[in-house]
Length: 301
Image (cartoon, rainbow, N blue to C red; front, top):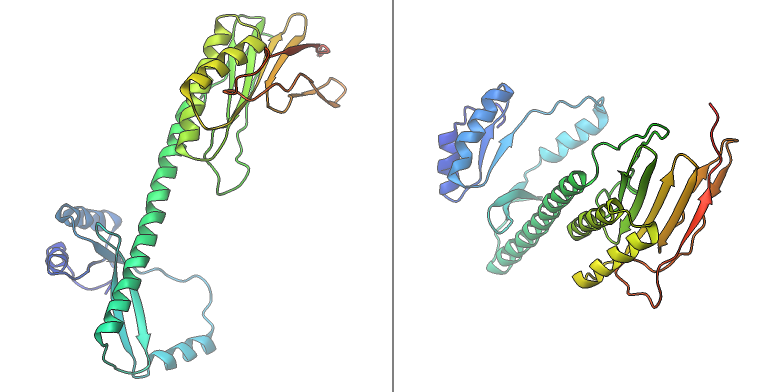
C-alpha cells in the first residue's frame, strides 16, 4: 500500500525471496522517497513504488458505484511478474469471476504470456534508451552558435517532420571564411537512427574542412562524396552548399541530390536558386559535380 510502513530492508528481502517488493511512496517527501530508492537499488532486484496520484477529473458517481459493485463480487486476482530478461519490469494483473484452480497447461500459458509481455516492454525501453543517446549525439554534432558577418545575420531553426521522429541525419552549418564571405551548408542523411546521426557528424566535418580550405561548392561536395564512397556506407546522403559573397551579392550553389535553396527578395517574394541536381553523396558520378552562380539583389536599409 502507498501509505504502509514498508522499509527498504523489507523490499529487498521480498525481492530476494522471489517476490516483487514495493516501497510505500505515500506521505513521504520526494527526498525521503529518493533516499529509500537509492538504498534498494544496490540489491540489483526489481521492485516497485506505490504512489498516491490524485485525479483532478471529476468522478462520475454512477460509474464509481458500478465499479464498486464489480470489485465487490467474489473474484480472484492473480498478479504475474513481467520479466524483461534481466529484472522484473512490471506486473500483469488478471481477474476471474470466482476462485479457481489452474492446471499445469494454464500455468505454462500464463508464464509464456508474461514472458512475451516482458520481452515487449524490454524492447520498448531499449529503443527509448537508444533514441535518447541518438538525440544527445545529434545535439552535440549540430553547431550550438552560428557566426555572423558584418553584412550577414545568421539564424537556424530545426524542427522534426513528425513528433515521433526526433532523431536523424539532418544538419546545417555556416562556415565563416572572412568578413565578406561565408559558406552555408544544409544536408540530410537517410534514416532516423544512431547510424544516421553518426554519419551526419562525418559529413559535417568533411564539408566544413573542404570549405575552409577554399574549395568552391561543387568541389566541396565532390570531395565529400569521394570520402563517403571510401567509407562504404549504405545510407543515402544529400547536401546543398552555397558560397556567399556579401560584398557583390554572388551566391554559388552546388547540390548533391538535395532540393535547391530558397531566397527571400527585398520585395518579399520567394525565389529558388537553381543548380544542377547532381547525384547524392557517396555515389560515384560519371562526371564532375557542377554548380551555378547567382547574383542576389542588395537589401537597402
